[in-house]
Image (tube, rainbow, N blue to C red):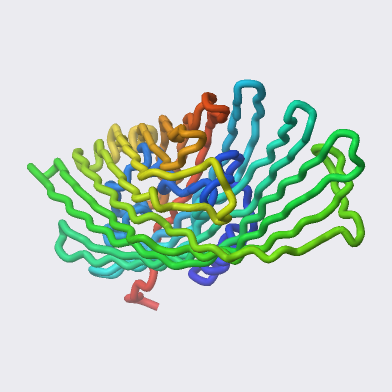
Length: 416
Protein backbone atom coordinates (compact mmCIF):
# COMPACT_ATOMS: atom_id res chain seq x y z
CA UNK A 1 0.00 0.00 0.00
CA UNK A 2 2.81 2.41 0.88
CA UNK A 3 4.49 1.71 -2.45
CA UNK A 4 1.26 2.49 -4.31
CA UNK A 5 0.86 5.68 -2.31
CA UNK A 6 4.38 6.86 -3.12
CA UNK A 7 3.78 6.21 -6.81
CA UNK A 8 0.53 8.23 -6.67
CA UNK A 9 2.26 11.03 -4.76
CA UNK A 10 5.07 11.27 -7.34
CA UNK A 11 2.60 11.18 -10.24
CA UNK A 12 0.50 14.00 -8.81
CA UNK A 13 3.58 16.05 -7.99
CA UNK A 14 4.70 15.86 -11.61
CA UNK A 15 1.28 17.21 -12.56
CA UNK A 16 1.71 20.23 -10.30
CA UNK A 17 5.21 20.98 -11.60
CA UNK A 18 3.90 21.04 -15.16
CA UNK A 19 2.71 24.49 -16.16
CA UNK A 20 -0.83 25.13 -14.95
CA UNK A 21 -2.90 28.20 -15.68
CA UNK A 22 -4.32 28.51 -12.19
CA UNK A 23 -5.52 32.08 -12.75
CA UNK A 24 -7.04 34.22 -15.47
CA UNK A 25 -6.60 37.55 -13.73
CA UNK A 26 -5.03 40.59 -15.45
CA UNK A 27 -3.74 41.52 -11.99
CA UNK A 28 -1.42 38.50 -12.17
CA UNK A 29 0.82 40.63 -14.44
CA UNK A 30 2.21 42.39 -11.36
CA UNK A 31 4.57 41.23 -8.65
CA UNK A 32 5.12 37.48 -8.86
CA UNK A 33 1.62 36.76 -10.11
CA UNK A 34 -1.62 35.88 -8.37
CA UNK A 35 -0.74 34.33 -4.99
CA UNK A 36 -3.10 31.36 -5.06
CA UNK A 37 -2.80 29.33 -1.91
CA UNK A 38 -5.24 30.45 0.81
CA UNK A 39 -5.43 27.20 2.74
CA UNK A 40 -6.72 23.68 2.28
CA UNK A 41 -10.22 23.17 0.91
CA UNK A 42 -11.48 22.65 4.47
CA UNK A 43 -9.95 25.91 5.73
CA UNK A 44 -11.00 27.87 2.63
CA UNK A 45 -14.59 26.78 3.26
CA UNK A 46 -14.32 28.61 6.60
CA UNK A 47 -13.07 31.88 5.09
CA UNK A 48 -9.42 30.70 5.03
CA UNK A 49 -9.07 30.80 8.81
CA UNK A 50 -5.70 29.44 9.91
CA UNK A 51 -6.39 28.77 13.59
CA UNK A 52 -8.19 25.49 13.21
CA UNK A 53 -7.04 21.91 12.92
CA UNK A 54 -7.97 18.49 14.19
CA UNK A 55 -6.76 14.89 14.12
CA UNK A 56 -7.92 14.04 10.57
CA UNK A 57 -7.67 17.32 8.57
CA UNK A 58 -4.36 18.81 7.41
CA UNK A 59 -3.67 22.49 8.13
CA UNK A 60 -1.05 23.76 5.66
CA UNK A 61 -1.09 27.38 6.86
CA UNK A 62 0.33 26.77 10.34
CA UNK A 63 2.97 24.01 10.68
CA UNK A 64 2.29 23.69 14.42
CA UNK A 65 -0.99 21.91 13.63
CA UNK A 66 0.74 18.88 12.08
CA UNK A 67 1.26 17.39 15.55
CA UNK A 68 -2.55 17.29 16.02
CA UNK A 69 -2.80 14.62 13.30
CA UNK A 70 -3.20 11.11 14.73
CA UNK A 71 -3.09 8.97 11.58
CA UNK A 72 -0.86 9.22 8.53
CA UNK A 73 -2.80 11.57 6.26
CA UNK A 74 -2.54 12.14 2.54
CA UNK A 75 -4.40 15.17 1.18
CA UNK A 76 -4.91 16.48 -2.34
CA UNK A 77 -7.01 19.44 -3.45
CA UNK A 78 -8.06 21.03 -6.74
CA UNK A 79 -10.23 23.96 -7.88
CA UNK A 80 -12.38 24.75 -10.88
CA UNK A 81 -13.12 28.44 -11.29
CA UNK A 82 -14.94 30.92 -13.50
CA UNK A 83 -14.02 34.60 -13.63
CA UNK A 84 -16.15 37.42 -15.04
CA UNK A 85 -13.79 40.31 -15.90
CA UNK A 86 -15.38 43.72 -16.48
CA UNK A 87 -14.05 47.14 -17.43
CA UNK A 88 -16.08 50.26 -18.20
CA UNK A 89 -16.30 49.25 -21.86
CA UNK A 90 -15.74 45.49 -22.13
CA UNK A 91 -16.29 42.20 -20.36
CA UNK A 92 -15.08 38.61 -20.72
CA UNK A 93 -15.51 35.28 -18.95
CA UNK A 94 -12.73 32.77 -18.36
CA UNK A 95 -12.39 29.31 -16.81
CA UNK A 96 -9.48 27.62 -15.05
CA UNK A 97 -8.81 24.22 -13.47
CA UNK A 98 -5.74 23.48 -11.36
CA UNK A 99 -4.35 21.36 -8.54
CA UNK A 100 -4.07 23.31 -5.28
CA UNK A 101 -1.86 21.11 -3.13
CA UNK A 102 -0.52 17.63 -2.50
CA UNK A 103 0.61 16.86 1.05
CA UNK A 104 1.30 14.03 3.45
CA UNK A 105 1.58 14.18 7.25
CA UNK A 106 3.27 11.37 9.17
CA UNK A 107 2.74 11.55 12.96
CA UNK A 108 4.70 9.90 15.75
CA UNK A 109 4.06 10.06 19.49
CA UNK A 110 4.96 13.75 19.91
CA UNK A 111 6.51 14.76 16.62
CA UNK A 112 4.93 14.95 13.18
CA UNK A 113 6.55 15.36 9.78
CA UNK A 114 5.00 16.69 6.61
CA UNK A 115 6.05 17.21 3.02
CA UNK A 116 4.22 18.39 -0.04
CA UNK A 117 4.03 20.47 -3.16
CA UNK A 118 1.71 23.29 -4.18
CA UNK A 119 1.51 26.20 -6.60
CA UNK A 120 2.55 29.38 -4.81
CA UNK A 121 1.57 31.91 -7.48
CA UNK A 122 0.15 31.81 -11.00
CA UNK A 123 0.30 34.09 -14.03
CA UNK A 124 -2.45 33.80 -16.63
CA UNK A 125 -3.97 36.56 -18.74
CA UNK A 126 -4.73 37.41 -22.37
CA UNK A 127 -5.68 41.02 -23.05
CA UNK A 128 -6.28 42.55 -26.49
CA UNK A 129 -6.14 46.34 -26.33
CA UNK A 130 -7.35 48.46 -29.27
CA UNK A 131 -6.28 52.03 -28.56
CA UNK A 132 -8.58 54.07 -30.83
CA UNK A 133 -7.40 51.96 -33.80
CA UNK A 134 -4.08 53.85 -33.92
CA UNK A 135 -2.20 50.94 -32.36
CA UNK A 136 -3.26 47.44 -31.40
CA UNK A 137 -1.60 45.61 -28.52
CA UNK A 138 -1.99 42.13 -27.12
CA UNK A 139 -0.62 41.11 -23.71
CA UNK A 140 -0.39 37.48 -22.56
CA UNK A 141 1.23 35.80 -19.59
CA UNK A 142 1.64 32.20 -18.44
CA UNK A 143 3.48 30.21 -15.79
CA UNK A 144 3.94 30.65 -12.09
CA UNK A 145 5.91 29.65 -9.04
CA UNK A 146 5.62 26.33 -7.20
CA UNK A 147 6.88 25.44 -3.78
CA UNK A 148 7.95 22.17 -2.26
CA UNK A 149 8.04 22.11 1.53
CA UNK A 150 9.21 20.02 4.46
CA UNK A 151 7.69 20.66 7.88
CA UNK A 152 7.93 19.33 11.39
CA UNK A 153 5.85 19.92 14.50
CA UNK A 154 6.47 19.09 18.15
CA UNK A 155 3.72 18.70 20.74
CA UNK A 156 5.33 20.27 23.83
CA UNK A 157 2.27 19.62 26.01
CA UNK A 158 -1.20 18.23 25.21
CA UNK A 159 -2.31 21.87 24.76
CA UNK A 160 0.71 23.52 23.14
CA UNK A 161 2.62 22.79 19.92
CA UNK A 162 5.31 24.48 17.87
CA UNK A 163 6.20 23.89 14.24
CA UNK A 164 8.27 25.11 11.33
CA UNK A 165 8.44 24.53 7.61
CA UNK A 166 11.13 25.09 4.99
CA UNK A 167 10.04 25.96 1.44
CA UNK A 168 11.94 25.85 -1.83
CA UNK A 169 10.28 28.07 -4.42
CA UNK A 170 10.86 27.54 -8.14
CA UNK A 171 9.14 28.19 -11.43
CA UNK A 172 8.99 29.99 -14.75
CA UNK A 173 6.98 33.02 -15.85
CA UNK A 174 6.65 34.12 -19.47
CA UNK A 175 5.01 37.37 -20.57
CA UNK A 176 4.49 38.43 -24.16
CA UNK A 177 3.42 41.70 -25.75
CA UNK A 178 2.63 42.30 -29.43
CA UNK A 179 2.25 45.77 -30.98
CA UNK A 180 0.78 46.38 -34.44
CA UNK A 181 -0.21 49.45 -36.46
CA UNK A 182 -3.19 49.22 -38.83
CA UNK A 183 -1.97 49.17 -42.44
CA UNK A 184 1.56 48.04 -41.48
CA UNK A 185 2.42 44.54 -42.73
CA UNK A 186 4.40 43.30 -39.73
CA UNK A 187 4.09 43.57 -35.93
CA UNK A 188 6.69 43.62 -33.17
CA UNK A 189 6.77 41.05 -30.39
CA UNK A 190 8.57 41.12 -27.05
CA UNK A 191 8.90 37.99 -24.91
CA UNK A 192 10.17 38.20 -21.32
CA UNK A 193 11.05 35.01 -19.48
CA UNK A 194 11.86 34.81 -15.77
CA UNK A 195 13.16 31.67 -14.02
CA UNK A 196 12.59 31.93 -10.28
CA UNK A 197 14.24 30.27 -7.29
CA UNK A 198 14.46 30.96 -3.57
CA UNK A 199 14.02 29.64 -0.04
CA UNK A 200 11.83 30.81 2.82
CA UNK A 201 10.50 29.40 6.09
CA UNK A 202 7.59 29.80 8.51
CA UNK A 203 7.32 29.33 12.28
CA UNK A 204 4.01 28.46 13.91
CA UNK A 205 2.53 28.18 17.41
CA UNK A 206 -0.70 26.56 18.55
CA UNK A 207 -2.40 26.59 21.96
CA UNK A 208 -5.76 25.17 22.98
CA UNK A 209 -7.59 24.70 26.26
CA UNK A 210 -10.59 22.51 27.07
CA UNK A 211 -13.23 23.93 29.43
CA UNK A 212 -16.03 22.01 31.16
CA UNK A 213 -14.93 18.88 29.25
CA UNK A 214 -16.51 19.99 25.97
CA UNK A 215 -15.75 23.64 25.15
CA UNK A 216 -12.50 24.44 23.40
CA UNK A 217 -10.68 27.77 23.18
CA UNK A 218 -7.73 27.96 20.82
CA UNK A 219 -5.20 30.50 19.59
CA UNK A 220 -2.47 30.38 16.98
CA UNK A 221 0.28 32.50 15.46
CA UNK A 222 2.46 32.17 12.36
CA UNK A 223 5.52 34.27 11.54
CA UNK A 224 7.12 34.36 8.08
CA UNK A 225 10.39 36.33 7.84
CA UNK A 226 11.27 38.34 4.75
CA UNK A 227 12.99 36.27 2.06
CA UNK A 228 14.45 36.75 -1.42
CA UNK A 229 13.22 35.30 -4.69
CA UNK A 230 15.80 35.47 -7.49
CA UNK A 231 14.70 35.85 -11.13
CA UNK A 232 17.01 35.04 -14.03
CA UNK A 233 15.56 37.14 -16.84
CA UNK A 234 15.78 36.99 -20.63
CA UNK A 235 14.20 39.17 -23.32
CA UNK A 236 13.65 38.56 -27.01
CA UNK A 237 12.44 41.00 -29.68
CA UNK A 238 11.05 39.77 -33.00
CA UNK A 239 9.38 41.07 -36.12
CA UNK A 240 6.37 38.86 -36.82
CA UNK A 241 3.49 38.27 -39.15
CA UNK A 242 0.39 38.34 -36.96
CA UNK A 243 -3.29 37.67 -37.32
CA UNK A 244 -4.87 39.80 -34.60
CA UNK A 245 -5.83 37.59 -31.70
CA UNK A 246 -4.64 34.52 -33.61
CA UNK A 247 -1.54 32.91 -35.09
CA UNK A 248 1.89 34.52 -35.29
CA UNK A 249 5.06 33.63 -37.19
CA UNK A 250 8.54 35.11 -36.90
CA UNK A 251 10.08 36.77 -39.96
CA UNK A 252 13.37 34.89 -40.69
CA UNK A 253 16.42 36.78 -39.43
CA UNK A 254 14.30 39.29 -37.50
CA UNK A 255 14.91 38.11 -33.94
CA UNK A 256 17.18 39.74 -31.38
CA UNK A 257 18.06 38.51 -27.89
CA UNK A 258 18.61 41.34 -25.43
CA UNK A 259 20.55 41.32 -22.20
CA UNK A 260 18.43 42.25 -19.19
CA UNK A 261 19.45 42.34 -15.55
CA UNK A 262 18.50 39.58 -13.17
CA UNK A 263 16.30 40.74 -10.31
CA UNK A 264 15.61 39.92 -6.70
CA UNK A 265 12.12 40.30 -5.30
CA UNK A 266 11.62 40.40 -1.56
CA UNK A 267 8.89 38.09 -0.31
CA UNK A 268 7.29 40.22 2.44
CA UNK A 269 7.40 39.22 6.08
CA UNK A 270 4.01 38.47 7.60
CA UNK A 271 2.30 37.71 10.89
CA UNK A 272 -0.91 35.77 11.27
CA UNK A 273 -2.93 35.66 14.50
CA UNK A 274 -5.93 33.42 15.08
CA UNK A 275 -8.52 32.84 17.77
CA UNK A 276 -11.44 30.44 18.05
CA UNK A 277 -14.04 28.98 20.36
CA UNK A 278 -16.31 25.98 20.05
CA UNK A 279 -17.72 22.72 21.31
CA UNK A 280 -15.63 19.66 20.57
CA UNK A 281 -16.89 17.70 17.53
CA UNK A 282 -19.98 19.94 17.36
CA UNK A 283 -19.28 23.51 16.27
CA UNK A 284 -16.52 26.08 16.07
CA UNK A 285 -16.22 29.73 15.12
CA UNK A 286 -12.85 31.36 14.53
CA UNK A 287 -11.20 34.49 13.20
CA UNK A 288 -7.81 35.38 11.78
CA UNK A 289 -5.97 38.61 11.12
CA UNK A 290 -2.94 38.62 8.81
CA UNK A 291 -0.47 41.50 8.43
CA UNK A 292 1.99 41.50 5.52
CA UNK A 293 4.82 44.01 5.14
CA UNK A 294 4.29 44.28 1.37
CA UNK A 295 5.35 47.92 0.95
CA UNK A 296 8.85 46.75 -0.05
CA UNK A 297 7.50 44.26 -2.58
CA UNK A 298 8.47 44.65 -6.25
CA UNK A 299 8.07 43.32 -9.78
CA UNK A 300 10.19 40.67 -11.44
CA UNK A 301 11.00 43.23 -14.18
CA UNK A 302 12.08 46.68 -13.03
CA UNK A 303 10.58 48.46 -16.07
CA UNK A 304 6.97 47.78 -15.03
CA UNK A 305 5.39 51.18 -14.23
CA UNK A 306 2.14 52.60 -12.85
CA UNK A 307 2.23 50.21 -9.92
CA UNK A 308 3.29 50.36 -6.30
CA UNK A 309 2.72 48.32 -3.20
CA UNK A 310 1.50 48.92 0.34
CA UNK A 311 1.25 46.81 3.47
CA UNK A 312 -1.38 44.11 3.05
CA UNK A 313 -3.97 42.81 5.50
CA UNK A 314 -6.48 39.98 5.50
CA UNK A 315 -9.37 39.28 7.87
CA UNK A 316 -11.06 35.89 7.95
CA UNK A 317 -14.12 34.72 9.86
CA UNK A 318 -15.59 31.24 9.70
CA UNK A 319 -16.56 28.02 11.36
CA UNK A 320 -18.27 24.65 11.09
CA UNK A 321 -21.24 22.73 12.48
CA UNK A 322 -21.79 18.95 12.85
CA UNK A 323 -25.34 17.90 13.83
CA UNK A 324 -24.26 14.61 15.45
CA UNK A 325 -20.88 13.09 14.59
CA UNK A 326 -21.80 9.81 16.37
CA UNK A 327 -25.05 9.30 14.48
CA UNK A 328 -25.68 5.81 13.03
CA UNK A 329 -29.16 6.52 11.71
CA UNK A 330 -28.43 9.56 9.52
CA UNK A 331 -25.39 10.06 7.31
CA UNK A 332 -26.14 13.78 6.93
CA UNK A 333 -25.98 14.25 10.70
CA UNK A 334 -22.28 13.36 10.44
CA UNK A 335 -21.58 15.78 7.57
CA UNK A 336 -19.46 18.84 8.42
CA UNK A 337 -21.17 22.08 7.32
CA UNK A 338 -18.77 25.01 6.88
CA UNK A 339 -19.10 28.72 6.09
CA UNK A 340 -16.90 31.80 6.14
CA UNK A 341 -16.10 35.34 5.02
CA UNK A 342 -12.82 36.84 3.87
CA UNK A 343 -11.69 40.43 3.23
CA UNK A 344 -8.23 41.24 1.91
CA UNK A 345 -6.32 44.35 0.98
CA UNK A 346 -3.88 42.68 -1.42
CA UNK A 347 -1.20 45.37 -1.09
CA UNK A 348 -1.30 46.12 -4.84
CA UNK A 349 -1.91 49.75 -5.88
CA UNK A 350 -2.71 50.53 -9.53
CA UNK A 351 -3.51 54.01 -10.81
CA UNK A 352 -3.53 55.16 -7.15
CA UNK A 353 -6.26 52.61 -6.31
CA UNK A 354 -5.82 49.85 -3.73
CA UNK A 355 -6.89 46.43 -5.01
CA UNK A 356 -9.10 44.56 -2.55
CA UNK A 357 -10.53 41.04 -2.57
CA UNK A 358 -13.75 40.01 -0.78
CA UNK A 359 -15.30 36.53 -0.73
CA UNK A 360 -18.01 34.43 0.93
CA UNK A 361 -17.62 30.66 1.24
CA UNK A 362 -19.70 27.57 1.95
CA UNK A 363 -18.44 24.01 2.30
CA UNK A 364 -19.20 20.40 3.07
CA UNK A 365 -17.13 17.66 4.64
CA UNK A 366 -18.37 14.20 3.69
CA UNK A 367 -17.11 11.29 5.83
CA UNK A 368 -16.17 8.07 4.07
CA UNK A 369 -18.10 5.21 5.68
CA UNK A 370 -16.08 2.88 7.86
CA UNK A 371 -12.92 5.03 7.78
CA UNK A 372 -11.50 8.31 9.07
CA UNK A 373 -11.05 9.54 5.50
CA UNK A 374 -13.21 12.33 4.11
CA UNK A 375 -14.14 14.24 0.96
CA UNK A 376 -14.48 18.02 1.13
CA UNK A 377 -16.00 20.73 -1.05
CA UNK A 378 -15.86 24.53 -1.03
CA UNK A 379 -18.03 26.97 -2.96
CA UNK A 380 -16.51 30.42 -3.10
CA UNK A 381 -17.97 33.61 -4.57
CA UNK A 382 -15.92 36.79 -4.53
CA UNK A 383 -15.01 40.10 -6.09
CA UNK A 384 -11.60 41.67 -6.69
CA UNK A 385 -10.58 45.05 -8.03
CA UNK A 386 -12.67 47.95 -9.28
CA UNK A 387 -13.88 49.43 -12.56
CA UNK A 388 -12.87 52.94 -11.51
CA UNK A 389 -9.51 54.51 -12.46
CA UNK A 390 -9.47 52.57 -15.77
CA UNK A 391 -9.14 49.24 -13.96
CA UNK A 392 -11.15 46.00 -14.06
CA UNK A 393 -13.41 44.23 -11.61
CA UNK A 394 -13.37 40.46 -11.33
CA UNK A 395 -16.35 38.46 -10.08
CA UNK A 396 -15.26 34.89 -9.53
CA UNK A 397 -16.91 31.64 -8.51
CA UNK A 398 -14.73 28.71 -7.46
CA UNK A 399 -15.61 25.11 -6.67
CA UNK A 400 -12.89 23.29 -4.77
CA UNK A 401 -12.59 19.58 -4.04
CA UNK A 402 -10.24 17.67 -1.75
CA UNK A 403 -9.74 14.11 -0.59
CA UNK A 404 -8.13 13.32 2.74
CA UNK A 405 -7.01 9.71 3.12
CA UNK A 406 -6.26 8.69 6.72
CA UNK A 407 -4.60 5.41 7.65
CA UNK A 408 -2.13 3.96 10.13
CA UNK A 409 1.36 3.25 8.81
CA UNK A 410 4.37 1.56 10.37
CA UNK A 411 2.20 -0.35 12.86
CA UNK A 412 3.95 -3.38 14.32
CA UNK A 413 2.04 -6.54 13.60
CA UNK A 414 1.21 -8.81 16.52
CA UNK A 415 0.45 -11.75 14.30
CA UNK A 416 1.81 -12.94 10.93
